[in-house]
Image 1: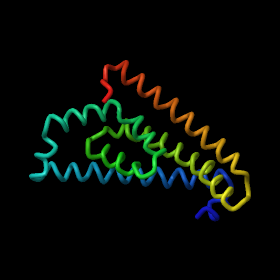
Image 2: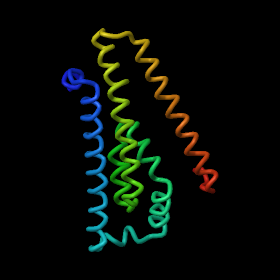
Image 3: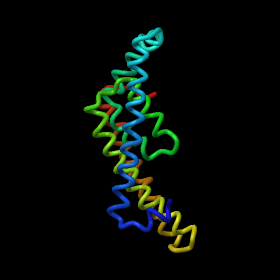
Image 4: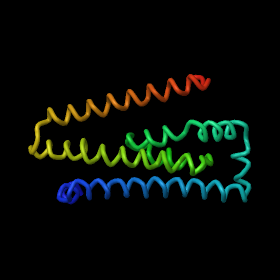
Length: 160
């Protein structure tokens, strides 16, 4: 796939990657919301009718959007986060903007760092530039997580 994406103009490759992440994230959220809706019509609903789940729903509704966006920068958690957002009834008006930001971040990360790693592995660029790109992503991630933590603390959410 790297060879196919690498052969496209950058704008087209970015669009393909963005759409892929957007559709996958939206579909996973939709599956979660449908599972929840189907569960409400069955005996499964009792599992969601607890104070803990209701508190989680309120928390996800209020603070979940940044986590959805940041989930796209993780490996192996993207689908779980999007599915949980659907299961916990995160409003679509909050999920969709977070999905757009996350898909943009994922496409940017894959198009820059991801393809840089592939190019470095095949000897087309220096590993130094890969390390610079990775360091940049780490610094941006730390800044965003600090911002989210401070915002949550200001809102009175206790750290776990």
